[in-house]
Length: 423
Image (tube, rainbow, N blue to C red):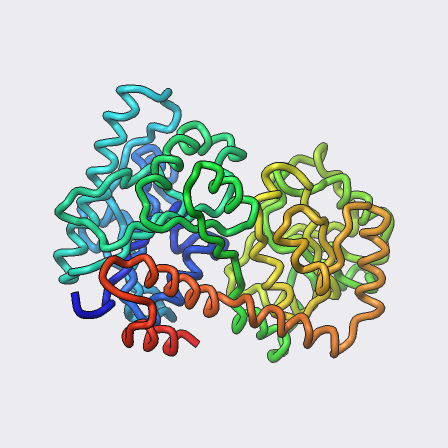
């Protein structure tokens, strides 16, 4: 082969229309600036189709799922190079124990996804492609010689052993995927270290942020979001402390949140995300405001009104493997950040974010960060975020891919052009 031109197929656990923007979706959007990207949605099962039939996610895909027509989708606002591909319905088999039946049905599921890839190759005239499996080792456990990529990449984005449902088969299948891939990447230092214990070379490629989007909370002026305005119309709070992401007992320190809310009744604590806890787990308090998940494009308007951002994670085995997406989103907006020191990755930001796991010190840190905030500090945070954008990460990923392709060197003209295009 004379050059390094290739398309990119991405199979991922994250669908393009998930409430939250994911690591791989963010990378895929950047990669599509220089390469054709075929983003294969995590397959819907027959069980999903029946139980969620009336939801927009199923209805908008119904023809693709049932008739195998309209399987390709272009997303408004994304490059023409970005194509979403919807596989056919698969079987729900995760509840089955490991064994012959699981393996047989897994083969059927695999055949459905492989046929989707094969059809895409034919329809778009794909010749050479890089295949990226992002944390979805349940599908495409092997690819036939008729649709072999020039490079197989596996990306780990979380500690699969700590998620009870996916760990059932995920631990074993992820090990298989790592063994078969020609390039393995992980999003946190702990994941990189843990997966490297299997004797494999794992490359560290951390999470980042959509800098341009979240920086809009600095450059644009937004109206006060309705949910916040409604509270302000009835109560007087001096400052807003905010968090963006799911509120789950697996990651969030509910005891810390309750302490903060009670210790600082003059502050409104705003949480934007799916609330996955009961009143017994997290006591309702008048200055705790929970807002359902919002499309990523709407978040800068909320972030603009946060005086301080927090990451109140537990320090446990699961969070030890997390590089939080939200950190660089907060920094892109120039906001002060107070966090627990849950992972090595967050501790790397100790000079720009205030880290403590003591409830008393956490409360004091919030107060200090708000009272001592200034333009110089905001600019410093923004500069750190610029170095951790998805644009930068896409460059790093392309360099890694270039080094592992069998037919080219990373300094070839075509790669340099791709790096210059993503800027």
